[in-house]
Length: 103
Image (spheres, rainbow, N blue to C red):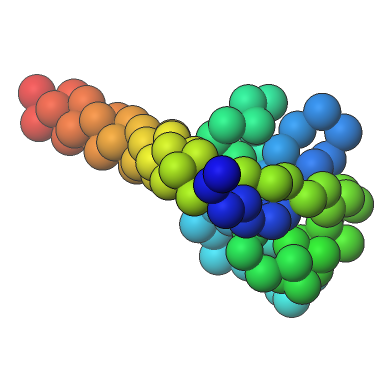
């Protein structure tokens, strides 16, 4: 039998926390978070206190998730690929804009 880990997800309605968005907050109360419908690309919290702080800030709830170490690795890879896809998309948009401006 594989050992299981207890990790946390932040859930807001039908959505799951995927991470913070890179923004310059205009004051201490402003923040930007990204939420996803697909639980498999959600961010898994090891530290329940941090998950609870984010849940409180956005009006969500913390749910515990029991997974094996293998599942943790697979879900972490999916989450990282999802986050990287946003960065790749931004780079592609910058290239398109630069090309348009150079013509």
